[in-house]
Amino acid sequence: VISSSLNPQSRSRLLAQIAFKALEQMEVSVEWIDLAKYSIPLCDGNSAYENSQVKELKGKIHHAQAVLIAVPIYNYYANAAAKNLIELTGKAWSNKVVGFLCAAGGKGSYMSVMSLANSLMLDFRCLIIPRFVYSTGEAFGEGKVSDPDVEDRVNELAKELNRICVALQK
Image (tube, rainbow, N blue to C red; front, top):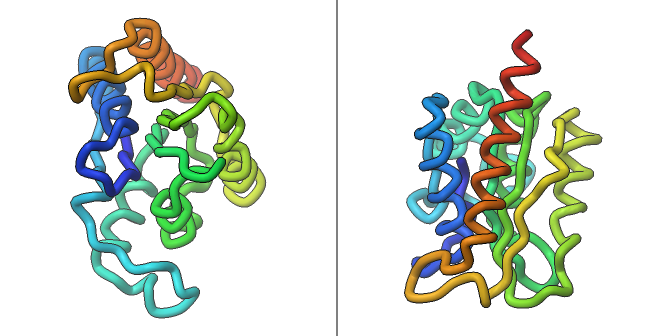
């Protein structure tokens, strides 16, 4: 589970934490990655790939069967940190099952992760879970997810991710 927000009061991180706990409760082997704890460079198409934290993240993604990525939505797009991570770690994403958890300010950006999803599908042959979570500010209060429907949707996404991964192992 990757939280891509760099904001200490991140709402998308709250979604990611719910998904992480749900996967743990299902006894799925799961790892937490919070990009706010990393200091990775911007992708320059050159030396940035040699950064030790980039190499660490690339290894973690490479060894994962699936990735849930939580993204804040800014200006009708997933945040730049998520895109930068994908650019830096590239082929490590190959053939992964990927799900999205989105936190946005308004309802108009619900298709904002499609360019990331398309890139992951076409460039790295990822299987994108079509059940992604998109939530707006009304779903949060007092530093937590306050809308039980959003929490249920996050749990359903975690279950779907696990179901697909188990099916692919057969």
